[in-house]
Amino acid sequence: MPSSPSPPGYLAPVSHHPSGVVPRTPPRRLPALLRCCHPEPALAVTVFVTALAVAAGHGVAGAAAVGAAVLAGQLSVGWCNDAADARRDTVCGRTDKPVAEGRLSARAVATAARTALVLCVPLSLLSGPGAAAAHLTGVAAGWAYNLRLKRTPLSPLPYAVGFASLPVFVTLGLPRPVWPAWWVVATGALLGVGAHLVNVLPDIEDDLATDVRGLPQRLGRAVCRWLAPLVMLAAVGVVVAGPPGPAGAGGLCLAVVAGAVAVA
Figure 1 (cartoon, one colour):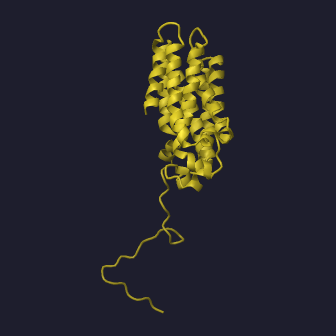
Figure 2: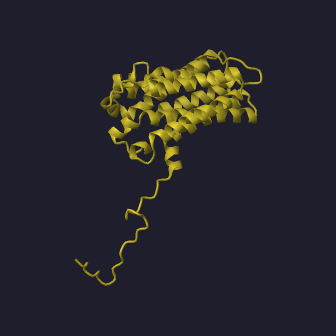
Figure 3: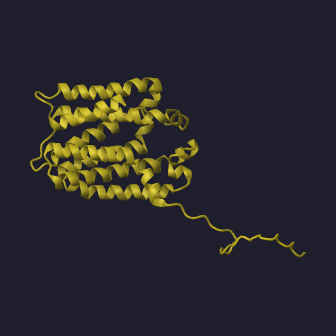
């Protein structure tokens, strides 16, 4: 049967694809990949530790090496988190997760996580073997959280280990390596636990719906809303009461960060 004539002024759609269907423009991968790495906390931790390195006595090159290693570690942990949570985020309909939105595959994010982890090793070794061991222990704790411990009552432990390892990484990487004071390590651990509580707060309901039952989820939103600032204020208290004399630049840096997060 002959086709009916097209109306005047009508332009037929043009397709150069064999199937007659114009393929969609592939999404831009780099912005989506950057979104998956949790850029805000990754940059915040990197800037904080770099400032701590400067305050501890690292030169420009040393502080830059510390910052590069920390950034690689944070990227690896962030990408590992989104790759591990791909199924959960899809079920929960997360609109802030590129993998859940279909803009990026979980395999691509997992590859990025492994690549950043591999780069983190030589970058950490720039500060010396002892410092590298401390930093890689913290990064391993982050991976352990993503892959297993976030679903257990031990969920705060990787955060405590990860944050406590950062001042150790900084001081063991000095030209004359030294262990940080106990109160610096304790403050880092408290900051980590507080960060864990703050990070979980917005997602407690989704976590419970997908059988993620870490310690904050078991405690509940109301308890965590009060416990998070109390832990941060405890970190401030350790900075103030811990050192025998003035806290110094590094201690003040820790106290400012803890106080700011507690207020927020």
